[in-house]
Image (tube, rainbow over all chains, first blue to last red; front, side):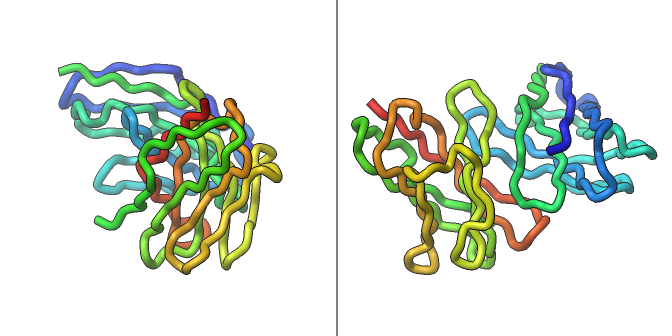
Length: 109
Length: 113
């Protein structure tokens, strides 16, 4: 399974944008980039996914580098409810999700 | 919004006992999964299930584990003879189709004593 690298933790203030980076230098052409998050004491929650083009949905935006070796999850205005562990996961020809340790995002009022 | 429902929310069992964890998938979903998360550790894939059979399983999913969808609605995970190290949060997840996003339940906390 292709590996991703994320910072252990990040901090933000409420209502500011947050950019969560992910490196995946060994990504292959068929790997989709998925982001999930896990709020405290809850199950993981799907955030967004993409292949090559940038993607937007109601929760976030995903910016994918042209060479696909990195991506950035963008929360446009962080709220206290966005405090969670964010996981960047590569999916290749399988439906299972391989979770790493993710980035713990703290949001301050 | 439709959701995956897991029962019970917390189960305490004695070592060596059998446990069954239950999950009600979202109604039009066809792919089902179990994951577990030992306290303070990563979420780990256990098994995926499609068309009434296991499609993929991890090394953790040994002969002590089994899954089934007995009545076409509930999706269950059975652990035949629990060990202390089976203590974890167990998450059920379901998805509409291959490659689509997975929806996770709130989890069952299993404590083996």
